[in-house]
Length: 92
Image (cartoon, rainbow, N blue to C red; front, side, top):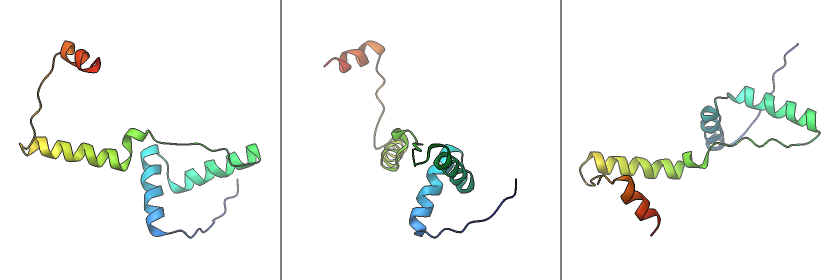
């Protein structure tokens, strides 16, 4: 198959954010746009819905890292709970 190049312009912050998400999905910018183009041809529209788990959102990961730092610095202490205690907490 003969290959051709395309050139896109986008905001550098947007490009960085897109590359971070694609990296989490295991895709390069080229592979993602190839998938996108094939989906457009196959469906005659833009039906593509690839998402990463919202658990890995930037805000959630920042909060997890803040909590880890607090624990590692001694500013917070983990209090072990038994499974029974956790179940009781969940039912409160």
